[in-house]
Length: 200
Image (cartoon, rainbow, N blue to C red; front, side, top):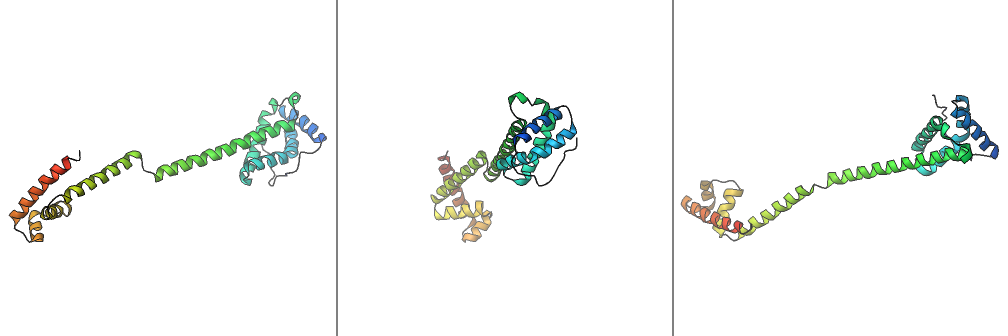
């Protein structure tokens, strides 16, 4: 069914008792599938529906969407209206209020979900943090063990294992015989191994 749609909703009050009675009669006819009655009812209640939705939802574009949804629901569910339980206008505005509150809750949930996803993206997982902490502690302990070596041992180990020099290149860097560098390196690595073993 084509919805009678007018952009720029009227926002005035529902009006007098006559309009309420007219709305009741029109809604009963809508329940029987009378499209002309629906168009008349639409013109009568669209203003109050939009006004109520706008107060709840705030955003004008979203308010228009929700108001349209309410009026479409009105066409589909008119048969559920019971004149003995209240006026048509009260029933329609109750539908509008529920739908508006649902939209606000849905928007809030979507915003919270996006915020959670954003926080997850900016905060690494616990395992990653734990690995980084552990790696940091290991580096600290290696530095501590290096500090316990003699100056020559420390220089030899640092040049070979951190700077990537060969034993011969280390010897050239330190202006020492290759045999001396090999001995210092062996002693230094032995002390490092013992020191790092104490970290376990």
